[in-house]
Amino acid sequence: MALDSDTLSDRDHLLDHLPQRISHIPFAIEQQDAQSMALIVDGDQWSYGRFCTQIRIVSQALEKLGIGAGDRVLLVGENGLGLITLIMAVSELDAWPVIVNARLSGREIDLFKDHCGARRVIFTTDVSPEAADHAARQGAEPLHLEGMPEMAIGPLDETTQSEPVDADGAAQVGAMIYTSGTTGNPKGVMLSHRGLMYVASVSGRIRGLAATDRTYAVLPVSHVFGLASTLLGSLFAGAAVRLAPRFAPADVLKSLRQDGITVLQGVPAMYAKILEHLDVCGEDLEAPHLRYLSAGGSPLQMDLKNAVEDLFGVALNNGYGLTECSPTVSQTRIDAPVESDTVGPLLPGLQVRFVDGDDQDLPPGEAGELWVKGPNLMLGYYRAPDLTAQVLTPDGWYKTGDIARL
Image (tube, rainbow, N blue to C red):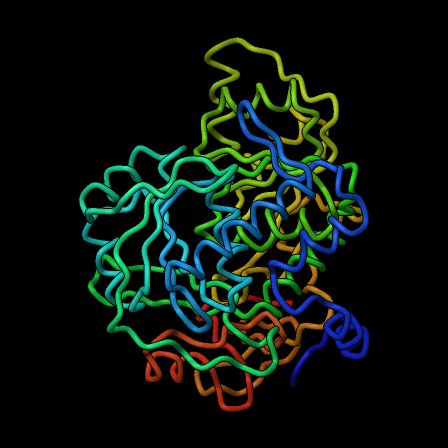
């Protein structure tokens, strides 16, 4: 028995009104208010107008450098103006942004490059020494573009084949995220524009995001939590995003104190480190504008949840997701905070099943393997049809492998 959240008609109405590409999100805000703040980093800040100007400049340059529709472009970097702009510029060309964290090993970077058949590899060297090291190792050349921070670009691979372009733009791959690679069998998760924008829109609405918000974005956009929920969710609402290339408790606390941060999302370990830092350094928390906290990416323990809420005076929201679900499946609601470690109600419009070892549905309330169905599901694992068939059923259910109950 499939269990629905809210109504499928509401979901379909939302999907009908989403943009066709993730790169269309900032352009829509530019039309409304080009002067509103979009991206903030140390020493610089871009309005939505400036952000969109840079996307246009970079997409035109990449096209001249041989990148076209259906190409895979490996982006090696960390959160910063360069990486975010590259993601959008690649999207504008109907190419696939394949986003990887520069702090991965050279072996992993090479493995991903070969597996995806990257037309080009681009490194955001401005905020990432590791990206600069990878660029030097691969013989990349400096890429100087008007108004952009330092980047480097690898040689053009003329042997790789472009993927077909879907007539439905929103059904195309909006980003590819690798879930592993150390085993020698990387899984490239193909996420559609529609799925990413669905999560961005719905999760942002659940957080009550507005143009007046400022989100602290330290979760890597090479992870789908940082990409879809934190970055795209904030941009979808016209909010400003304070980008941080890597986590340091002192930097988070400084930004909460000085930058007007209203929204902070992280993994449980991040909050534990903040608590530890405050305790060791004897500092007082100053977060005068903060109104929303959330944790995800790993289980949230009740003692940590209680300690964070006692310190911040704000509910620590929780959720559940997987890369293959873009990533969000469920999320606690801002208007209904909970005192347990529940991962909250389903996103609107999703369907779930709880099944036994024989793939038979279990009665409500009994624990079983969670299956999910909805517009946020991955298109599949790139170049791995057998792996895809193991987790995606012919009628559209994703087998999470996790045990859950309603």
